[in-house]
Length: 489
Image (cartoon, rainbow, N blue to C red; front, top):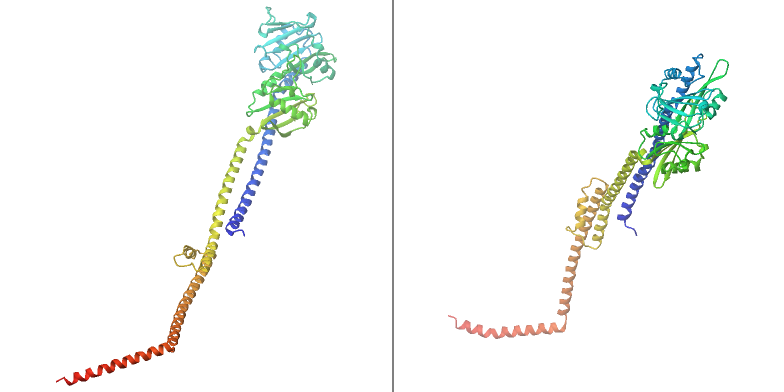
């Protein structure tokens, strides 16, 4: 038989455990789900913010190209047959969009059908620089300070290259389309180290439909990486761009250049472990070509949980239809994204666990307090059964204290105490009656024994002998009495 002192507290504690534990578990799961939803919302917000920032950065070359092309169209009489003529260079530099208004990564090129190329740049030197080339003179690229152009002197740098802008893909595509185009990624021979760029180009036509020039501006992939690196992202997070073939275009950390010159690095081959593992996961799950729009997911790299947001870049902007098929991926470690939320949830979980232990302890204590009067009644009944109960018995004293309770247990204790008192009173009365009966039985037995002795022959003989002895003593005493009487005066 299992004792009630075990069953009752166990059931009481189990009920508390189920109630509090189930409530805490549901709250924990709910809060974790809310934290994950919050993480995805924050991640999507960060991704949209990066998308907006990149839009502002990448739209500058487009705006620059369009505004300058419109400026040339507004000057139909401006002859562009010799782009390298100093007065024309000065006029073009002071035109619609001046060199001073360009950012550090901005540039502007004008190429004419004669194979001449005039480029305004400031990236390499940080000053206003013009780069000029004429395929009719061998296509050598000369770099000169704008302020000294046309004054002779030694150029800042000479790049021995037979550069003909008419052979470039962006030039041919712009003329073929007759409007604004964005070229695929290519390695520009005009730039130092043949850096990878994307070229925005727009043609300008004469009134008779002949091309006058092609205005273009390059988007440096290194500039995009530098721009991403200047974004204030959470620690242990990274943002990177990749194309449909999985090439790494730009990243907020590390380098996107490959070990082989003239070749883009694959994102899955990046030296950065976060980019490499994320690109591998995206490639295995979706394929780089089929990355969904605005998709958030979570994956585990080693022991670290990461949230990833992927989206097609600039699909609903002015880039739409221009062939810029890039994807954005933002990777943030769970600890950096929702560390405070997770810490708060874990703290609440530990607090709930502590409260659960406290509730169980209180439940056990309460259960013991509730069953103690029942146990006391059992002990008193057992002592009463064995006739070991007296006023000094500890259990009876505890029972007397239990009568002070103002509840059902106190009422039960008072009833039981009255019953014990009545039983004890009956017991004492019975003891007294038994004692009296014992005395009466002893007197009756004594009288019976006396009668038995008195009726025996031995007692009759003894009685007769005693009588004779008394008679003899009486007769012997009579002469002495008479003699004394005679001699008395």
